[in-house]
Amino acid sequence: MAVSIQSFFEHYASALMSYSAEKISACYQTPLAIYSDQGIRFVNQMPEIVSFWKEAVKPYAAQKIQKAIPEILSGEQLSKSIFVSKVRWNNVDASGAAVMTETNFYILSEKDNELKISGLIIMNK
Image 1 (tube, rainbow, N blue to C red):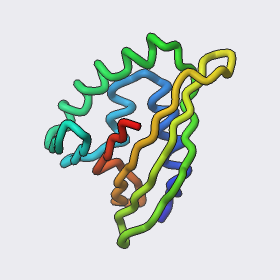
Image 2 (image 1 turned 90 degrees about the horizontal axis):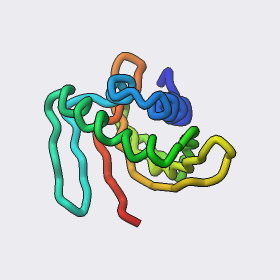
Image 3 (image 1 turned 90 degrees about the vertical axis):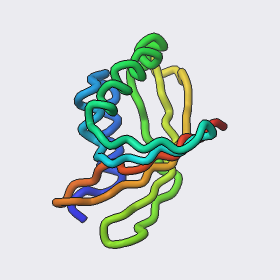
Image 4 (image 1 turned 45 degrees about the vertical axis):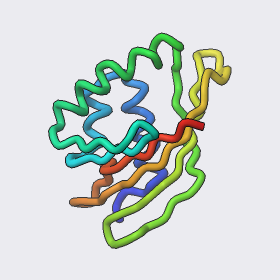
């Protein structure tokens, strides 16, 4: 694997802090499966991911989050190209004060020496 899980999430954090739906969406691939208490959703088109992130960045910007720090709680390689990782995001403002934390599971797929998010399990804890 050319890119480590840690490196991927640092790149993803940078994309998140760009507040650019296009840059964030570039970290995903389709089809994408999203699991949550609201059910399972399958996303088959990249424009759906971009549309989602155009709205999803707004609450983060409103909270004035300046840095998203990924803390990898677990990671496992399930096959040659499939990885699963549990990540806690520590989101801080410009002064370094904690704004919020959130934890999710990510299913990552490697293709052409590049990791992309192909599945997401949203935790509501």
